[in-house]
Amino acid sequence: MEQVLQSVDIVLNTVWARLAFGVAVVAVLVIGVVLLVQWKHQCTRLAMVFGKAADPSFYAHIDTVTHAFDQQTTTQNEARAACADLEKTSHRFFDSVDIDYYDAFAGQAGKFSFSLLMLNRNGAGIILTSLTSTQGSKVYVKRIENWKSDAALSREEEELLKKNNPL
Image (tube, rainbow, N blue to C red):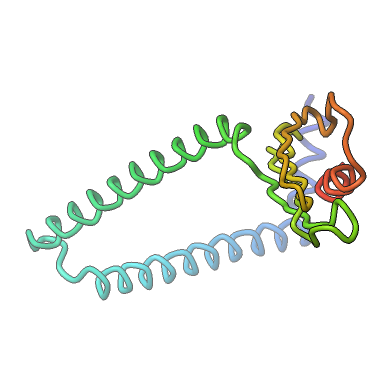
């Protein structure tokens, strides 16, 4: 143990060790001065912004701003909750609505026949089709689930469904 202490003493008594210790002390002093100057500038800026903090109107103003911020936060949280609730139930809304006009019976009534597609984001909804001829009009409704119908679709209905299918 005594040899170790002597070795450490020899190393610390060298010129390089003393120089390193001096540099470390100077670095600590410089950092301290820089931090002190920054603190002084910050105090000056705060005094410019807030003036005399002892003024009672200052605290009243801070309370008003804090209360307004709390109200805004509450309103924002309520709006987020309402949007989340709406998002949970919006799968029942129609996200895709499209209509296609066509001539179901060539040369008879013109393009007065149509297919109306109304689907939600899950591919569920209906296709409402009205076929118009010179004798009158007939309306059909076909249910759509997962982008497919349990009833046979006409060519126009198939095209309308394919056009609105994101998959």
